[in-house]
Image (cartoon, rainbow, N blue to C red; front, side, top):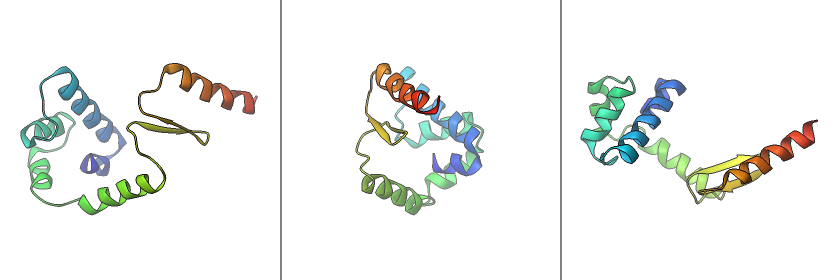
Length: 109
């Protein structure tokens, strides 16, 4: 995901979709390099570049810093959304999002 993010938000979003599809609709193991390479290529990243990143420690320090920053800010669930200073964590019901956005709409209008 970090490498895809360096390529742009569109590539990162494509990779996220590929990984979710492979994991939830297929039988992919998103920790397996073969499956990660397939997803990266499907997202538009050159295979050689994906392989090189997986065989290196590129991005490791950056990802560790981002994870630490998230922990320090109190994030302990995935997914976590922060909407107008209100935190929604884990598998929230759609009504929680409706309420959060309704509060924003009420304060703006």
